[in-house]
Image 1 (cartoon, helix red, strand yellow):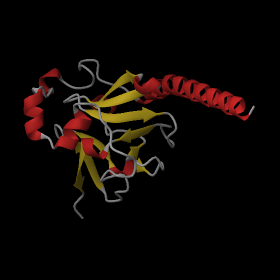
Image 2 (cartoon, helix red, strand yellow; image 1 turned 180 degrees about the vertical axis):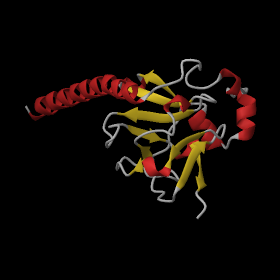
Image 3 (cartoon, helix red, strand yellow; image 1 turned 135 degrees about the horizontal axis):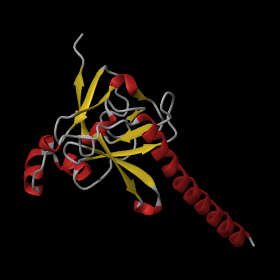
Image 4 (cartoon, rainbow, N blue to C red; image 1 turned 45 degrees about the horizontal axis):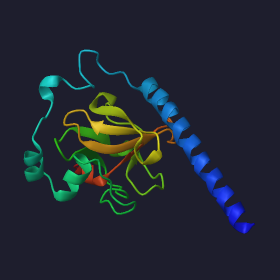
Length: 180
C-alpha cells in the first residue's frame, strides 16, 4: 500500500513540474517580448558584421576549459560554485567569449538559486532567446548575440520591473569592476 502511495505521489510531482515548466516558458517569452525592442535592421539584435565566428579549435585556444564547456557546449556550473553568484561589487558583466557588455551590477539580485541573476540585460538586442527543451523541461535559453555563446536561461519569476530572472553561468562571463 505504501509503495503505491509513494509511486502515485511521484507521478503527481513529475506531472506538476512538467505543467510548471511548460507554462513558465510561454509566460517568459511573453514577458521578454514586452521589454524587448530589437532593431529590425539587425539579425538577433547584432549587426551581422559584428558577429564573432571561430572554429572549435580557435575557441579552445582562447577560452579556459570551463568557459569552453559552458559557452560552446551549453554546459552549466553547479549552484553556489561560480565566482560571481554572490559578487556585490559595482561594475559590468561581459561575455567571456567576445567581451560584449551584457549585464550591469545594478540589475543583479539574489534569487537564491546559486547562479548570478539579473532582471534585465543592458540591451535585449545583445541576447538571443532560444527555446530549450533539454532534460524534459521547456525553458528559454539565453545566448550572447555577438558570439552565440551559451549564457544560461531566463525565467518568469524575477522581481519588478520586468518580472524576469536571467540565470547566468559565472563561467560565461567576466566582470569589470567600476572604478571609484
